Image (cartoon, rainbow over all chains, first blue to last red; front, side, top):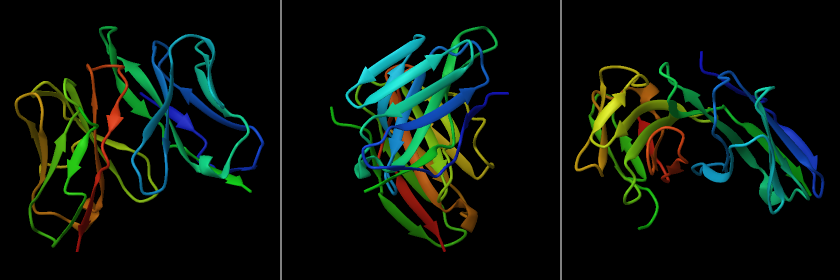
Length: 115
Length: 114
């Protein structure tokens, strides 16, 4: 069963705070992990990708990956009202033969940053 | 070239009519995906193309839905005898190769079936 689980939210944080978004996945062999942001009425846009255990930072965004726990997270520092959106986690599944398959998307966490 | 493009951006049709939705992927991208997103819901996978072939059609909800891709580029999603439950945003994405590559999304086509 290919599953990517996210808390649907809404997650509400005050402006300037750290927003923490979490995602768990079921396929232990997954190797590629992505975070997308989707504003209301718009299509998803890529924020970050991560492939190795540990942290990856890009500006105010940090992705964290723990393959042993099958857990990936996204931290947004100094949250701004413009960060208010739905954040989608995407993880690739592994085919029966062991090759890397396509992405499975979580249902997303809605983030609201209050001024 | 530019990003993924889709047309039309909006389509309003009457129940029972057929509709065609078009997707132009990023130039050079061999993999193309169609998703559906109902209001307030997550992405629902429909079909995936590698080149002109569709190795995974598992998400097509019924035989009223079909898709093709020609020349390894443009794809068309066709919905026959549309129903009100087909109303949704249809999103197309492309990636350089298949598998775990980054997918880039088009702006979507909003379909409304009256």
